[in-house]
Length: 511
Image 1 (cartoon, helix red, strand yellow):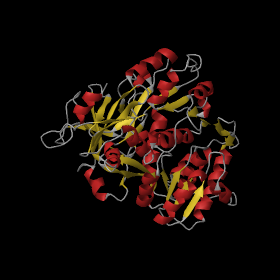
Image 2 (tube, helix red, strand yellow):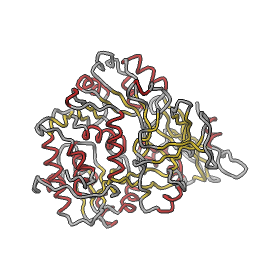
Image 3 (cartoon, helix red, strand yellow):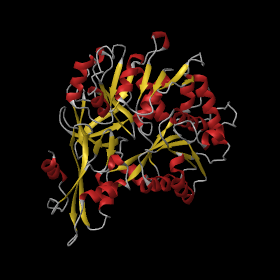
Image 4 (cartoon, helix red, strand yellow):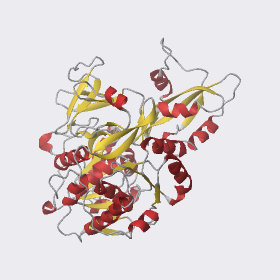
């Protein structure tokens, strides 16, 4: 590896084990990919991207089902020096039109099933290249890449060069593109490799059981970078299925999931001490882990889940300790700030709060993003004068240094590990015929942690049908954003300034 090349792919590929014919990825269908396959396939895909005459910094937008080939496309995008833009497979036409228009990708990769409508959106927005990629190893992307050479010189990048854009929903409307650099992602991966005790091949080696989606930070960056930077084999599941996970646990040592996945695994009687005997580490994140789930997992498996905290804009920020010598793993907390991360809790006036007191969480470190794509004013607004990023999360740090997240300073709903911002959903509801106004709140849910509830007020003389409102939203928005229930209200409670009091609504409808 060129020591002056800060390309993330260069660091990941440098960590491939000496035996390139060893298995790197084993799929749930029995397909095996060697480390040599990863090197050759990413070279061919990178050469294809390089042959298109794309400008420097071109965005490669990807909305496909999870597959090893989708992972190879991500790595090839890094290798070729372009910017990866993963998009949730649940996004519908209105959302995709916004993302394509805002990011202006040079290339769009989608499933053959969605090619018709997505290619029209892309070509209209000025995207010149649209390829297909399906989870059954077919598509025009692979057909075109097959003709390319299987050797490729990794593109030279600086640590501050853009590697990926992750769209994170805005609390006041449209999504914002968080710009993550090669340096952001590599620094975080290196810290986590050490902090979570990833074992080298000499120490017996780790095997990651990968059951997360790969369109967000948790599955794409935290899990995959961890395994690749350690030269560790992955057992790859295209989708989460409790019985398949339990069947594969004896072959793995590391598993990462959102709280919903742990809850569903606990419902299966096949989850036992014996099945998890060879596991080294269970990690949870993307949403708060209920203390009941934390304790039930301990009782059922003998393992203590390690909960951590991160964001699209920062990757991982804190983690409960891996090693007992560093402290206990405490349920209900997200542990300590990671090495290199400075985390503080401030009051609304920007002053530090005392230990145990609740305030606004602000962070600084090499993992913190470069800013929001094409939103310089918003970027400046979200950073303090001394360079701390305002996370928008509210929390506290106790006397021992453990961080606890209390909630969002805004009205974020985290449903099954996915972020739902009410303002975005309300915007669509308010455009429906007969709707005067609406409020979307989060209410507790046994499986998803919380789900959306829409309260809708009718215009004078109009009659609203809640089921029809839900159906209209399902045709427009990703399913995880659609409220699970809609109720018609006479009016919405307001404070003296006329603002809807969502705290009052949450108390009223929490049951």
